[in-house]
Length: 292
Image 1: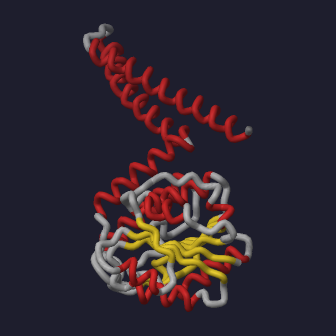
Image 2: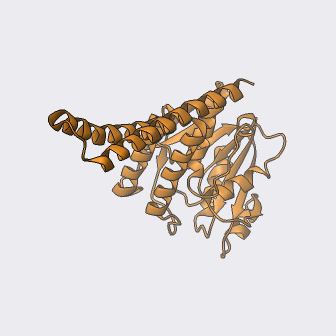
Image 3: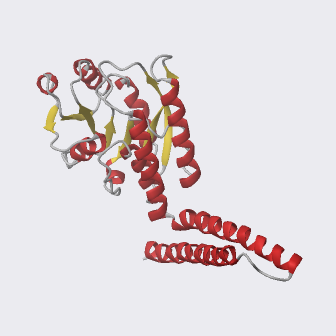
């Protein structure tokens, strides 16, 4: 089984340790290591000296790096593994990710929370990760506990089924959501996670917001009924609230003086019904398209 390991790098002081461990951990396999680099230091030179194929990243972003790397995978590669170049992930965990694929699973995610060092992740980042994971679990019904893990393995044929587009951090969530939508089998395995070597390249707040927006957008595109029905019901409920005050006034006095509330109530209810019917119609259309 030929394995392609893709690693994005930006000024990684630990890249030599990462690569030595990758080659040693997979010494019994036919492997290629693809470094997608956007460094200003000697990272690409050191990586090339150790036997990695170095690709210069012309675009920008975490997702763009992986999408670029996937384009350079050998045609005979059967499995693709990904991990970061800052030594937070232990390359010796890669064989654990490969085992489920040998057993027939399409996509394997490393669960960092199972074996995480105490100082590897801040409480803020851990909380944000759990909230994002909970949202993805609820909206897409995928049973995972670490949606933002950067250590994964996927069958090459399964990767070719995905339509990955996000150039930045939402790529991690997009990969899971897209895999779920095309019917890939997904599982997790426990992996180690340690404090990074070098400076962090991510902005937790900005990246978290972009992940949330991307997740909601994909719900709209892939499962419109889940997106539009709550919005429609909210409009209807607010409209009924204003309408109830008008009905109560008419019941008590026999006249209607709150014309603005009555008009607003009708508009809100009509808008809510239109949004609801639009969601139902979009869901019917998508269902028919998927059956073709």
